[in-house]
Length: 131
Length: 131
DNA sequence: GCTCACGTTGACGTTAACGTAAAGGTAATT
DNA sequence: AATTACCTTTACGTTAACGTCAACGTGAGC
Image 1 (cartoon, each protein chain N blue to C red):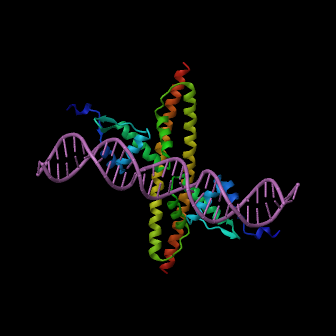
Image 2: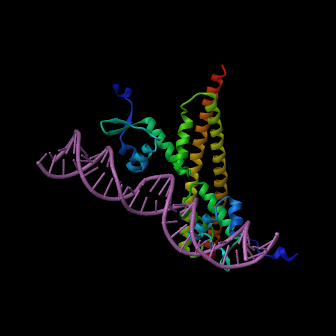
Image 3: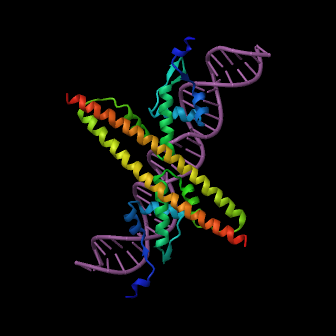
């Protein structure tokens, strides 16, 4: 079965369904230059690589990244240049993004604590109701 | 010194400076009903409680929360009603928000891994340049 | 009085991130 | 042929989250 050698592709609605987003959203990301599907005539054909990028964009979205920030991430993971200047800049960007993630981790920790406290108060109020 | 008994207050610019935001932003949050400063004539007077809420809003912002979500959080931490129905709803909301934070933690973990990988590739490229 | 710093309200503008709709094309199925 | 499902482009609209600006008031200090 030579299907095993065929590059796996996805239609726009495949991806929209998979990720529970609209086709409009996907086209918007394309306009933003973040993904570049192939074409069969006018019809967009998405590769697995496009799909991975889309996953990355949506993950960034869940973490509150702007699209510009997610685009920057994509470029970090697939740098288009290997000269020393750019590699130094890339390393710096990686560190900056790391710092931001650390801040988010700290924020999450605080928020989790606050939710625990809120839950404790909630359950105390419930217990008081049952007495 | 009877100052120790005086409730600590802040002006709008105090808070703006402290948190590196504009007074416009603070007023916007007030319009959204998230903080309610007292007044001395027309002038807003912010309590420590307002300040804590502001911190909470900004933390949520760093985590990508909409203002509506942050508002919901504020309400969770200071519920206005103690009846069983509302307490059950509150407990549910707490759990939902917990799940969302867990998702964000997972997302962060993946992203950190990706950054590590990117860094490894970056340093390999640097080493190749030096040879 | 003048200037400066801080504060106010009101209102329009900007940007990001899509949503919605219209008009049209292409297969595949009945 | 008609219908259905999927696809396209174009373009305007909506919402969220402020930014910017104008006009004004109030102290405090020179």
